[in-house]
Length: 330
Image 1 (cartoon, rainbow, N blue to C red):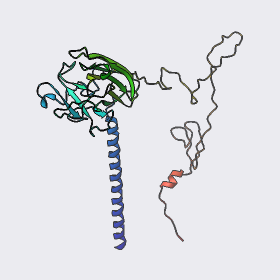
Image 2: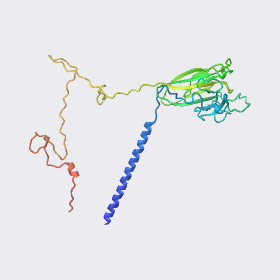
Image 3: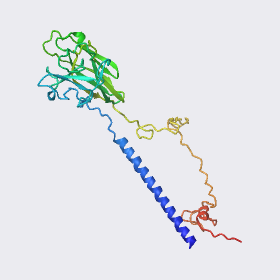
Image 4: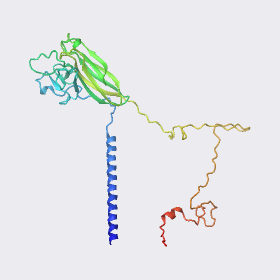
C-alpha cells in the first residue's frame, strides 16, 4: 500500500511539473507572438506627396477668437492647446521659463486666418512698450523620414509692415543646419506682403527636425511666418536582389564561382563544341550498416525481399534497443 501511495504521489508531481512546463511554454509563445506583432504592426513612414507632415502649419490653433476680440494677437506656451510646435527662446536670459509664441490675425494670412510672429513677447500686460525684450524664438517639429527620400519644405514669409530689414530675418534649418534665409524691408509697406519660398532635403531614415527662427533685431517686432508644409515628393525604388537559385539568374556553385567550360578537343572528322565533356561520376560505395548486412542480389533469388535485398539472420541494432528484455540474476 505504501509503495502504491508513493507511486501515485510521484505520478501527481510529474503531472503537475509537465503542466507547469506546458503553461510556461505557451505563455512564452504568446509573449513572443505579441512582441512580433507589435514590431510588424508599427507604421513605417510612407512617401505620399499629398500628405503634409507638419502639424498646425498655418497656426490656426489655438483659436485667437476665443481669447481676443475679432482681431489682435496673443502669446501661447510651447506645445499646448494644440499648438504642436516646440517653442524655444533664442536667448533665454531673463525670459519666462516656458517659451511663448505670438499668434496674430490682424492681417490677411496666406492660409487660414492666423499666422505667427517669431519676434515674440514675454507677456501681454497692458501699457507695456514691449521694446528691448530678448523675445526672438525658434519653433520646430520632428518628422520620421524615409532614407534617401526627397522632402520639400514650403512656407510663406513676410516682413512686419513699418519695420526695416534688420527686424525681419527668418532662418530655415533642418537638423540644425541653415538651408535658407529670408529677409525683407517692411518700412514701405502699408499691408502685409507674403512671399512663398521652399527648400528640399534628403531623408536620413531617422527622425529629422525642421526649425524656423527669428534672426533679426531683438525688440519683439518682426518676422512673420505662415503656411508651412512638408511633403515627401520622391522616394527611392526598392528592388529585391535575385537569389542565385533564380531561374533567370546565373547558377553558381557552392563557392559562388561560375564553372569554367572546357571545350572538347578537336578530333579529325568531328566538329569542336564549346559544351564541356560529360563528367562521369565514380560509383558510390555501398554503405556499411551495423548489425545488419545488406547485399544486392538478383530479384527472385531465394530468401529475398521485394527489392532484391537479401535478408540477414542477425537482428537490427534498433530492434535490440527497442525490444524489452528480461534480466536474469543468478
